[in-house]
Each structure stands twice: as structure tokens, then as C-alpha cells.
Length: 355
Image (tube, rainbow, N blue to C red; front, side, top):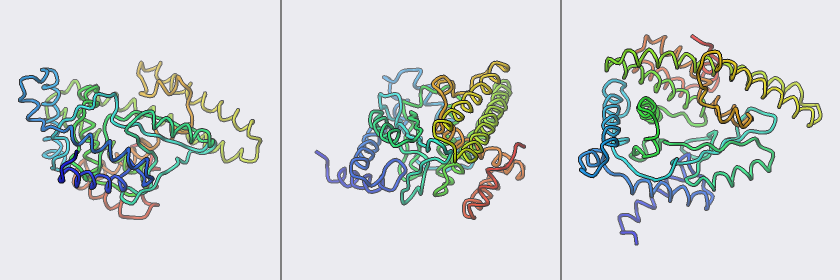
């Protein structure tokens, strides 16, 4: 039975989760979101306590000490929020914290969006249980949408709660773990309602720049060079996906009057072309895309929408950072100004070409 204080906290979570991106105000969805967030919060322990505990596995202690280092660097060197987020640890004993559903119409690359009071309209919807996410995805698929269900190891409540580091994040390598902390804190620094593409690309840019600076500050020059090479290769592959999305958008608009069967055949051919182009690049450079499972299963609009949400606007943010000569506070302020401005200005940023 909940204490009075716990009951008040639970009610606060229920009220806030109705406003956050992981829930809608429908009763069933709201309850699963509130329950999931409440359980996560109850499992938090201060990282200092976990590290000091003699029973904590030595390997976990090292990873959490890495987290502490990254968290301090985020505040002192990257000027990211200095708060209680990512200073605690929670064990969930499952592969992901949430499973996001992404959807797009059969012949469109405009994502389905779900709208909430605080976050505005966003291009994904999250569930704390995989079976619930897949059940909802099946419903959307029956309605004619292309769908994707993707497990997520971390997320941000935009500073509304003190977000913990999760055991789901421990599956990451060191750089991905550090980068995820920078990424999620970037969401707390700047968030624009109704613009998932702007928000995710801003956080990706902060993550990438933060990682480069973190490696440089620790004198890990060989790792920095390897990381920068991987970034350049990733950017090349994102351009290939972007080119594919552009071709598909043209296909969808120019074949709108054609029979559905004919449009489906043309769409499938284009998806196979995109897959072949990315795989050719991978083979040529000996790299992985990070989306090999999607390529193997067969791309659909939801896959391409998801990639675009995170990466389409990154070149524009990189250009903005360069224009401010790497001055992060000036870059943040310029990004905030864009966030306060008209949609057209943010779209222009997202259309910016490579540096």
C-alpha cells in the first residue's frame, strides 16, 4: 500500500505523464506510462552509493565511474544542465526501457504524429512493454501504415524528473554510453514543441561534438581519430538515405494517380535500390550502417522516417556550430533563437547541405 507521500508522487507522475511524450490521455495508455515511469523512479539509487557498495560488480563500478566522469564533463565543459539527472542508477532487468512505435502512410514520408500539451506533436509513441507497442503497431498496420517498433535504451523526461542511468544503457560501448548522456541532457537544454526533427538533430550534434571534445580532453587521440572517421562514414551513409528519401518523395508525388498495385511495385523497387546503395558503400568501406537489421528485413517508410528524424537536420546544426567557431554557448543561443522563430527558419536549417 502506498504511503501518503508516495501516493502524492504517483498522482504527480500520472498528471505529468499525460503531458509528456511517452503518453496520451487515453486511460489505458496513460496508466501504462504512469506505471512504467513510477516503477523506474522507485528503482533509482545514487550512483555514489552503488559504486561504494562492496557487493557491486567491479565491471559495473567502472562503467558507473565512467558515467560520473561524463556527467561532470557535460556540465563543466559542454555547459549542459547541472541537475540530478544521470546521477542515479536503476536496474530494470529488461533489454530496453521503452519501445517506440513509428508510423508513416503507405505512400508518404510524412510521419504520423501524436500530440501532447508539453511536448507538442512528436513522430513516435512509446510503450514500457514491448507487447503493447507491437499490438498498437499491428493496429496501425491494419489501417494501412508502414510501421516500425524500435527498442530504446534511454530517454529524457525533459528535466521534469531526475532521469537515472539505466542498466539498459550498459549494453552500449563506452563511447555510446557517454554520448547518450550528452544527447539526453541536450534535450533538457533545448526542446521545441512540434519539431522532432529539430530536437533530435540538435541532440545528435551535441552528442557528436561532446564526444569529440571528451576524447580530446582525455588525450585519447587515436580513439578520437577513429571516432571522427566513423562519423564521416556515418554522415556519408545518412546522405545516401537522404537521397533515397528524396527519390521516394518524388515517386510518391508523381505516381499519385496510378493504380495502387503499380505504385507498390515502384515503391518496392526504390526501397531495394536504397538498400543496394547503402550496402555497396558498406562493402566498399568495410563499415556497418547501424541499420543492418532493417536492411535485411526490408526497408519501409517508417524506417526512413526514423532515420530522417535523427539525422536529416544534423548537417545544418554542424554548419551553425562552425559559424560560431565551436563556441557552444553561442551555438546554443543561436539554436534557441531558431527554436523561438518561425517553422520556415528551422526547415531552412534542416535543408542545409554538408559543410
